[in-house]
Image (cartoon, rainbow, N blue to C red):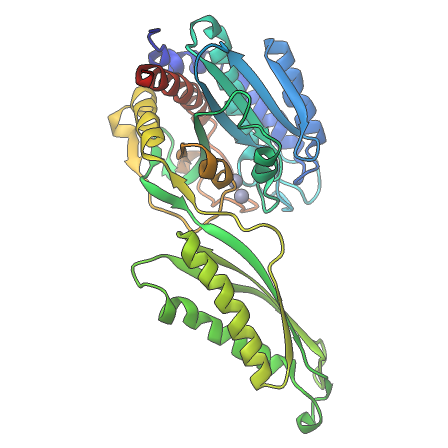
Amino acid sequence: MTIPKSKHTLQSALAISEWIVDLRRDLHANPELAYGEVRTSRRIQEVLTELGIAHKTGFAGGTGIVATLGSEQGPCVALRADMDALPIQEQSGSDFSSLKPGVMHACGHDTHMAMLLGAARILKQDESSLPGQVKLVFQPAEEGGAGAKKMCDEGVLEDPKVQRMFGMHVWPQLPTGVVGLREGAFLASATFFDILVHGTGGHAAMPNLVVDPVVAGAQIVNSLQSIVSRERDPFGSDVVSISAFNAGDAYNVIPATAHLKGTVRSLSLEDQAANIQRIEEIAKAIGQAHRCRVEVNFPGTTYPPTVNDDKALAVARAAARIVVGEAGLVVNSPTMGGEDFSFYAQKVPSAFAALGIGNEAKGSTHSLHHPEFRVDEDALPIGAAMHAAFAMEALAELNLAKP
Ligand SMILES: [Zn+2]
Ligand SMILES: [Zn+2]
């Protein structure tokens, strides 16, 4: 039984922190949207090649990468980073701001890639002592594109079979030096919906001659709020939000259609299925009551809730204690944000951690997806050390559990 070296991961990460920060800044300045992470993928491949780490690419539409380290003899664990940016015009004021108008790494996925490459470098230094294999999964399209599902469908969790998996997200609500973990559901199931209300439209002064989709749409907005307040368990967690209502553009014309968009979230997959069903039933019934025809569509893929497995969570806690100490480990609140890491967690015992990046002095206080979003880069070596420690602790646990 090899003794894990995770005690030293923070020192190892601090020694290469400038390298991690430079990588992050390069990725930050060159953001790419979901499934278009071509330069990003190439850059990661270059770094893996420089480090002498074997990797395969072409996954999930082309940009996904799986790298492998360690020994094929033992168990296999996986670490994940997401690669895509968001359609946001950056206003962070950083020296290394996005060079691409209207595209920004506002969810910190640039830092996720840089931290995982940092972990790769640390693990490579100690490769001969790894009691098993580590897969590094770089996936495209976390932001609504369900890139993780494609990676799973293309077999990245097989051959060799991944037995534990870990992911991490930068978290502005926690201060730098803190890692948040929680039991059970951490992030919500997320589904988008479109509601098209078809009336007839006509002169706004003669409503008796038209079928008005605006009034029907307004009733639908209000009625959908009763799903969470009247039908779900008050101790559960569900959200139904209408985020867009587009209909007409004149003072004196009733439009023929109204288009509503929204998102529905739940910490339970069963409740999410019920929410989806009721959105469709209520929207159609309200439409009928107002003589309108209603179409309801759920574009994209529903993300399941991200649920932490107890065994993987114990490993993640052990890793956090080593890297940030007992004082740096907190119980994180669940969030109604979605995460496609959930697709891996459905198949492999997994844990997902929140990495504190909040620091008022450095201006890293804005929420994820904000145009002024900034990251306290002091958190990057901590994140790299966490990833390396996840792998070492999980391999140690799996070796100990062997009969
Ligand atoms: Zn995001
Ligand atoms: Zn994200």
